[in-house]
Length: 501
Image (cartoon, rainbow, N blue to C red; front, side, top):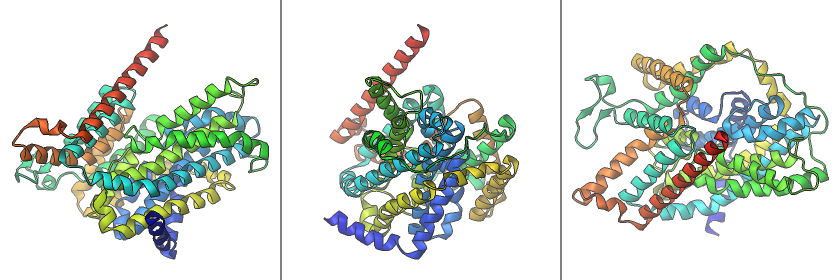
């Protein structure tokens, strides 16, 4: 009952006119960016990061959550209509969703995706309300060894488990960790890797790196490699934008299964919604093979319903893991963690104790965002698709100007603009050679946390490294990590063997 009463107080804060405005604005921005192929919620949050420092924290994070959820809603729209998913998490939805569109059922496909995303997000929001306080209480028992194990788990999982190349993932992680240690050491006061430049004594700004890597790097890549190419031909959405009773009965079990599959991945640093969406699709495909008349390959509604529910249920739980544990499971969540720190807030048990108004208003805003997104996506999906008519050169030129203005507004230093350009070129090169970006961002965000807790653990034990594995919680995390790595290696070896044969 405590959670319900606190949530009621959160709704009182979230439903003020000011916060409702930021929820709606975040949902609109997230959906608009999600519709654009190649863009995504991580870019939108990165671009908004320098702008939102003028807002009070509750308003800023309510808007971020709207962008986070809205990005997933918008991603699937282009996957269905143009077979061009906005992000990797929407790829599984395109397999059957685009076939439905080609068969003249585009409107029903868009409705299936919107309702599935709503169900997954709503159920995960309910789960977060009851699980987040429990996770926060659990994290109160964490010491330096446990936090170091948590950071190490995130490092290894995001850099090697969810990437095509473990080597490239680890190199990207090391690059992020290398950027994180630039500056004056907080313990010894010794400058590290500053090249005697006073501009680097405070370190390299995380805001600058995230905007450069995720936004400016994408702009350069589109200009140089894709040359602002237009996407393929869009299928027109005709017919009824709702589902019949038969279609609802067909989709409902898939929505339920997809939601259940996605929930656990919200607290596992395994790259976000990519894996659970493919798992949900695979489950439905296997079940379809047992039917007398299999539907997959011809526009099966269950093949779209399950991935959509799985993706949004993962995102909802990810917000709970971020608030309660300070654990980001994706690049977008890592940027939001950085935003908390910019405001002087540290997610975890102390956040629930010191800033309950912010936490519960944010949790309440999840429910509001789900309703808003359903309203603006269910009947107006084709209106969002019209954004593709914006000429790509104009769109990306606007993004570039926004990047520069945001960074200069936060620091007022020309040096940061030069850093923005340099790191943007680095982001372009990483995209060009297939290096994942999420490990770099997560390494930079969690690197200081891992370093500080490793030092604290070793200092408290007089240099005895055994303290890192003395805790049952830390040992449990390492055991789970080993199991995950073993399963990943087995999966990759099996898939390679199949390709060879």
